[in-house]
Length: 210
Image (cartoon, rainbow, N blue to C red; front, side, top):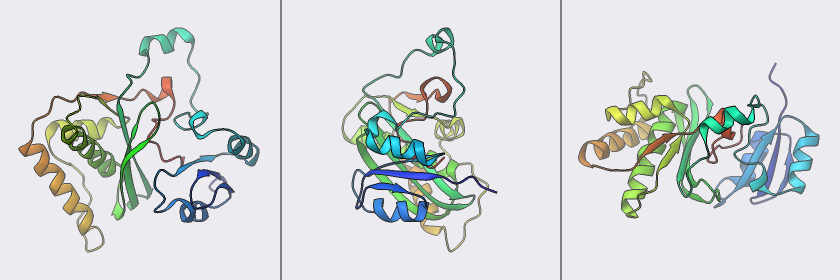
């Protein structure tokens, strides 16, 4: 049986602490710059709601704490930079992705939800979207991703998913084809870096649904 979660919405159509993801989603859908995150207990959620979004997003309380010496080996994330991430309800399921400023968590772009997608596809699309976004803005900032699979797919220039195309996810695969075409036709000097979750917590672009 899945553990119950509590969802905090700091900025949305309606703010507060909610016990259902569907209710939370209703209050953040189509709200630009929505700020929200899930918590394992009501007490944690209520405490977080009294605080600031920036104090909680990108921080994973479940991560095993490393010693100061171990953390020092990873250093600190480069800022300014772009962080990307995806979220998928089910596998396959409804998928969306976004890119944010690593330091301020300001959202630069978001796409979805797409029907019958996977998290890996979302991570791949997020990275390609980020590359295009930075190139269009003539920016040399690095991109952070917490997905080794997506990073390898981008390096190979191909989304190597085993997911089959259906009438439900055709729109998603149209996006995939466009992303692969972009990689084939464009060069870039952007550094794609691995987000070290165990040292830094959840990536700032995380959707907060864990």
